Length: 452
Image (cartoon, rainbow, N blue to C red; front, top):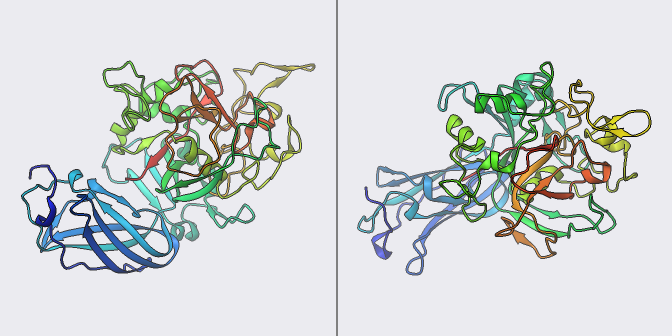
């Protein structure tokens, strides 16, 4: 079929149905086109009893003929919770239907299924191979098939955490494990009483609404995972043969991960959105896994994932750090300067011991306590690249799905690292580096998968 728009009354709505798959009640499904002022189609439905996050699958038909809508669907599709009216939007121009085609018997069926809590991508298998992608539900976790779990590890946050992911190095070497983060509204930034790395109270408090769920890497990308995708080792500082595999990849630039603006295809978030360079790590990862949604997190996605429902300085619920340099609470959660990140030579803090075990320098990923959503090393270890251009002030106005500034000189890095003191590891702490910089042994990254 030809690609194009669907004009006005040539597009008719009929026989709309709802379907309950047991995960949540779906009713009152209605469909209407925004004609004549828009070609978009609204699919509204009412959901009840979604105490756990559910995904909504849309099956569309013209009479008995199946229709392919996937490329043009957005809205309340993934990680839907609570109850009330929700909306899915279909953009026909992103599908395969024409101006002339009349869908006189158009109908949809909505099916709810529990949203998988974890997603496991096997890097040793080709895209589409059997077992290449595994989804893990709460039921799977509770059954014990995947090892140990912990429920509600952080006071005030209802969650289940797969702690057994740290008991098998395969999840940090041959596989990528990601945790589902639901669409959320949260408070980004920190109170003025908390000072950051630059001592400037720059993290303005403001509400952020993320309208789409996403999957976030449980671990920072490791040196062996990099090797699996790129086919060779990255030139990391902590490259001791016996310990490198489960350490985070470091000394890696934003340009190496996503591509640079001087390539054949311009790469410049947010102007070019999801485009990545031909030789970039992300291009190789997307190609080998068949998952086009892989990317770095936005600044807001990163902080939402780090906080995991908390509002204080640290994501274990700690409201304020008791010490700017070394903090006992942080010692349980992060590798940083004062608990092994740097070397004490007897009189001063010295440079890293390059050939050390993981007791010094970067730690093996997952060595410290996770946050309430089961993400490890959100504080400390390596600072993590984000998509956004860095700006000093984020303001106090509520924003929806922020993409960051249109241009800049440096990109945002988050999470502190082995070179930083305790105050630099806060959930709200922000710093920056030029996207070409690759000479720091604390510059690494974490992946997300953005939902359609």
